[in-house]
Length: 502
Ligand code: FES
Image: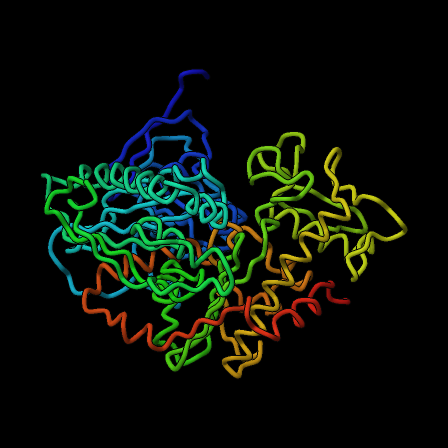
């Protein structure tokens, strides 16, 4: 019935809004910064919401994934729930959890407010935190305005080398982030002072935000001397924030491996773990880190844009009309299209699935060639993969697989020694683990691979709650390997270009 709406209240945010009755929660909560790490497939439990008022009938997926105790307490999966009646919900993701055991972290209560920001190449997301309770009081997201000057980090670096380019990029991001911080600070009760602001991001974002020359990042060995902790008073950035807090951009780990991965180490507790743990964030650059409390090694593999469906003939973002999942069932292809509309293209997770399904069906050979002299691998009309598309995927997956091998070798470890591998970032969250293994992207058993959501933001929050955190001591245990100047990398990379035989 038109105009028939229900009210949703989010706690402890205090946000309320109206939505059409029957709206899937996934559709509305995403706009409030809630992540759906497994793409709403009902596998990860990380979209849990607690029903404080209203009614959400238990679905079969929830009955299978949540314990009887959790269901009785009111926990539901936002990716499987619809707003049929007015609801008051608590969002589990806004509890700061340690990923290693999914427990809420312990902290010494502080005073006042603090802000954590994940500065991504495409988006930025910030959270306002109450240091006395650990609660998230507000969440804001925004697009990175630098994107008009290039969508990936290398095009930002190139623009940064043009006259006035770097200054433009620095100004754009400082202004946009200043607005986001002001909105978050205004959401705090009574104009309370903000004590601290922690920002994490990749090395290019770090340099451009802090006003550091990006020239060393434009050529081999892509190393920079100036990747350390930068502390700038809010006022010096032109920001009017109550309390004029220090703005800390956490230090990079080396090369293109930035503080987003440092934050991932904190979120996974890799630096305190007796067992070997890995974290991989896949995008145009595949950032790879493995280690334990003894030693940590990281690297960045230039994967190219295939995981984001860039340079794929019918590639597109994971939006309505994108084939996001492909399966081979009884010799037939089954495609799931986002938004239940006619297919328009294919996104990164669909591409990995399609290659895995093509290998299963024998339509794609282990060499990557299309079988029987076919020119395309037809998925769902009009969407098909070309030989060139498969080649792009091979280049991307070979770079990451070779990077993983080099890092493990440096640690003197084998894949079987890795107790847990976390996949971070958007692509890592949506990719099907079995398909990633089938194409040779990630050669770890599915049960050891965990999709981890935004580890960068989580780690930034942990840093805020632990002012005594010994970052210098942690950094001294991290070694960065430059794959571009590693003699063995090329050889392993070429060897990884094919797909594994069954
Ligand atoms: S279970 Fe809901 S997003 Fe994963």
